[in-house]
Image 1 (cartoon, helix red, strand yellow):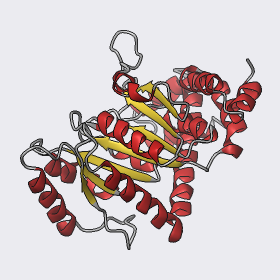
Image 2 (cartoon, rainbow, N blue to C red):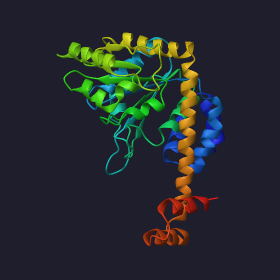
Image 3 (spheres, rainbow, N blue to C red):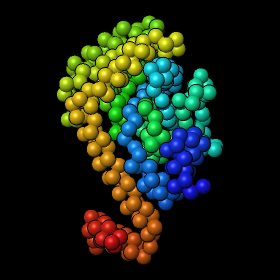
Length: 318
């Protein structure tokens, strides 16, 4: 089926077309990606993008499941993109998140997709930005991306989401890890999950203390005090309050014009990454050809310095 027909069916709300487009985005060539993105891009921008990140074991999937239930109760259509660790054998996602979200399997207002990280650091997949565009074009009110949970490499989600929820749990040292990893700077909302455990109040206090001590980053948005919410996602306690905090942040983004600025920054980052990808592709096409071999020999013989040789190589790309 041609991408044009798939996009038309996606706009009519056909779930099979949505699934097929996501598969093409994840597995397709650059030409396929270009066609799909070109067709769906005019239909994007209407969804609220919520990122949920945190270390492994803090209960991100259970929390996401509970949030989906809460949002559905409020009449929202929700899509979830759960980035799973890759199987070392097949390279595919382990599907753990979809197993834990079976409560919504028969709900037409919920779409859940697992995507393999395939070794990409930062808790996401290479195809995540394009997959989010497809889900956005699908007409969902809220699109959630849940990261793989990779300890101190979770900050990449902040470049994609309108609202980033950083999840920690008592007794795991996560408040300290958050400070070390720079997560304090990317969190729009903090969630202390598994708050029925001993040490939940202490974790909240540690986070508040670190918020007070931490100097605001260059990109910090003045006027938004990052809230800390306690939840027990397994039984739903505190989830409504967390959803309210996420909604309040979105309202603040719109009211103060920050949402447009964040999306402009996101477009800028995406353009840079795509341009770098094109350049990398051209270099890969050159391989170890005559020019590379000649320049490498000159550098090795100290006839030309590396920067001059690199400039000549870049100039040859045209």
